[in-house]
Length: 265
Image (cartoon, rainbow, N blue to C red):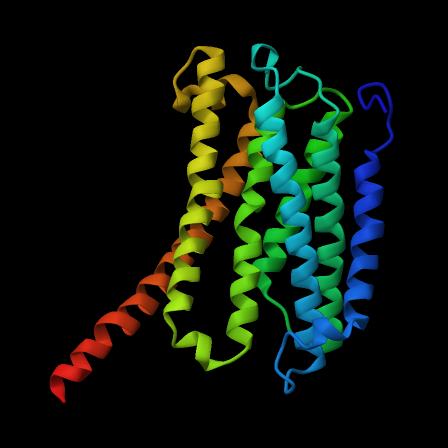
């Protein structure tokens, strides 16, 4: 499909809004999925688990394809706004489709179980608006594959985040273990690398292509890319600071408070 001359959306968008809900429904019927959580887990917990597995599958696909794009792109032609590649619309369509169905699931969860995160909902709606903007822009011109590839790598930390949730749901054995500190550290480092450092490095690489410094890139790539990436960077930075605060509290309480108690005894 030549998206530059056709108003049709990428086939990956149709695949995402079809396959992901289907996968969610299948997971909800599998016994081994139900056995992941403790027997006392309620229906809402199992619903949440299925949603997280779907999110992890999507994030893994986006990460693998994102790496493929970055490793195979023709760097001599990597212009941020005009270089054409079939994988760019595939990634945007897949991300847009996933976020759309995931946000619908978030609303459904609120209606059915009366629970939900306002911050996560705001994040989803904001990214959906950004994805819609990119998708519309794809009808006119294609953002460079390096640009979209780096954005795709932001999914890299998601499976670790959901894996941590599963372990935490299994009880205090994990909460009071060194494994938790290891997983928390892996999440903190990976999140920073793919969502904050990666965003900055993208500016460095694009600046090198344009012959300008990284901080001058926003003035050369246009408002449509600068605004959306700046919003995402700000939101990711806030999320990372929250993770860093939780990590500091967890590590301090596990390694240092125990020693202090022992000395008092």
